[in-house]
Amino acid sequence: MLPLRSHALPLLLFLALTGCANLLPMAKSTDNSPWDSFAEVKAAYDRVQPFATTQSELQALGFDPFKTPNMQILNYLAIIEKFMPNTNITKEDLDTGLRGCIDAKNGCVAYELKLQKIKSRREGNLFLDMLRFRREAHQTGWRFTALIVLIDDVVVYKLWDGTPLIDSELYKRNPLGPLQEPAELAGDAALVGTF
Image (cartoon, rainbow, N blue to C red):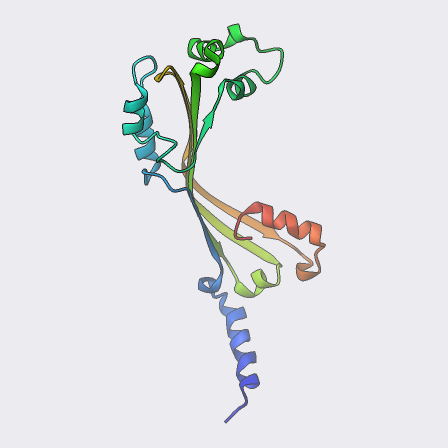
């Protein structure tokens, strides 16, 4: 019977030639929430009506920072910082609801929701990836951010943004592979969580 060492070289050669993408790492970044998709959270957000939706109705839609993970509570000072980052923007430039929030001071509260569900899978040749010569990844998922401002338990302002469909290919080539400088390899990690 051949020693174990003699079996390792053919196995490594096989993996290097086939690329064996199934052995490459995969990463997933998911923020827990009552919504499973971009469409679900956007539909809930669309039901929020400024100067009509109450705090209890907002909570019934899932926007409750004490029950829904990943929601931040902001005060009026955070609103000033967010919407008036410099002296060129005055209170008069703001939406009516935001002006009312600043005037209400402690009577104003805002909920900020930041959700993402992103899956990243490394692709390509296992051998070239392990030695950092070439790295490829495919990212899919979505992101959603919402800001809802309330004065005395009534919504007065809302704002959203997001990416309904993330589908991107990432590629990094290091001609020197493992000899690349550590600082350059850190930039490699910045491209995608799985790098």
